[in-house]
Length: 331
Image (cartoon, rainbow, N blue to C red; front, side, top):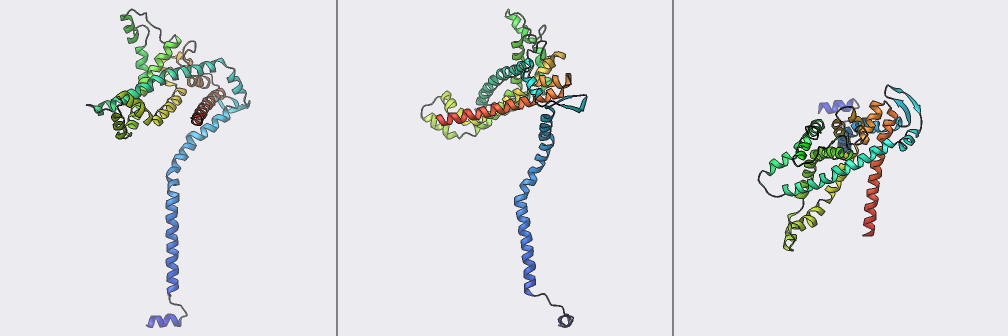
């Protein structure tokens, strides 16, 4: 009572209900603002590190490479650039080595991708059945993928060696003359393709297996009641059910074939690895890029090849989308 009287005599106004209400309203608004910030801003905060790393290690090199491709610049003097506009692209268009490397990339890609995906599809179909030691086989199928490119390429190089390789020994037992797997064009490309097939078949098989296990069992039961055989169930139920995964693996394999580098480099065993053999018989776009940049020191031409590879992938993707759209319209 005395305290209230003292505050009144001093001219101070005691805290009333309105002031307490204003304080609660301010606190409530602050809490609502923090809640909106948490709900709307948290997702951006979580994905921001990825975009920062992507900008630093992917987007910036992409832009910088495009800038270098418009200049004449050597590896030893990167700070000295001469503007040549699109001359590097014009020269690349008329370079027979580029078209040879592009054709080698396409042929090796086809030879390695088609058998690889077919074998992966068959392996996944077998692993989808209930069988003993299924977990062991699934883990074992990932061993080639976990093996380094260098180790796999070295082993296959010894297997395909002309004088004491296992493949030529097996051919000799049935009366076939030894094959020079490195010097001849098509044998070399087949040998390199087997390395790619061995490394990636198990990985793609597990992708197909995961997609197969997501197909409802009712579809197989309905097909069985309709009298469909196992093969008909596979072609009319399994394959359509994993179509999106098949498209994904085709795209992934196409990108991998375009970037093929380690397998042919090690298969060449020395200087011939960079040039793709004495006659460039298995030189891919990746090897040509490396040769121009780190052997001939022409970073401008090397960057031009890199952008040509990127443009080819974009054109392939656009063509695939256009074909898909035309098919949907006609159907």
